[in-house]
Length: 95
Image 1 (spheres, rainbow, N blue to C red):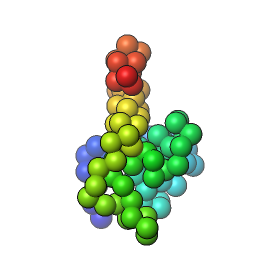
Image 2: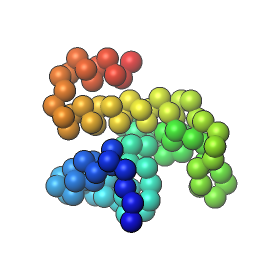
Image 3: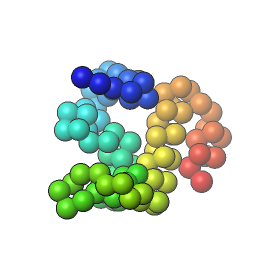
Image 4: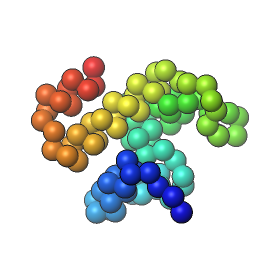
């Protein structure tokens, strides 16, 4: 089993919050930030991924610029909330 450090806190949050969508993302191997961006932006999961997906749903090497923006903004806001950043930080991040 492996996990990078940036995923540890959100995993704990998913468990502590008992959030079904967050936990499902981890259990199915989906990207948490893209999953959350999909919910926030009300767009398909693939449109919120940092990289385009192939016909089998696997990540490719080709960057999805708009998906990357959505995912990055969602990640910054989630981590900002977790670490109690001020609202001004979150608003600057989401522009």
